[in-house]
Image (tube, rainbow, N blue to C red):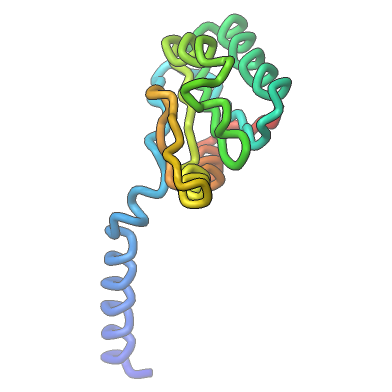
Length: 155
C-alpha cells in the first residue's frame, strides 16, 4: 500500500466511523446514566424475572442501600428487561415503592426492545409507570453502566 492509499483508507475509515457514531440509532442506544456527583458507590440492579419475590427483593436492596449509605452517597439504577419489565407496569403492586425510590434518586430503566415485542405480539400498548426511563436495550444499558464503573448485582 502506498502512502497515498494508506492516507485515503484512513480518511475513508474515519468518515465511516464518524457516520456510525453520529447515527441517531447508535447515539440513543443507552439512557443517560444517573448524575450523582457526590456518589461514592454506583450500583446497577438487574431485574429480568417477573417473580414478585424478586421484585420485592430488588426494591428491598435499593431501600437498604439508601438507608446504609444515604441517598447522596450511592447511585442506584434498576435495569429491567424481559419479564422483569413487569415491575415498571403502571398497575404493578410495587408501584408506590418504585415511586418512593424514584423520589430518593433511584433510576428505573425499562427495555423498549421488550416493550415493543410485547406490544407487537399482543396488539396492545404496555401501560408503563411514568417514572420509568426508556432505554433501547436493557442489556446494552447494563453494559454501559458496568463500563462506567457500576457494580452489577442480580438480586
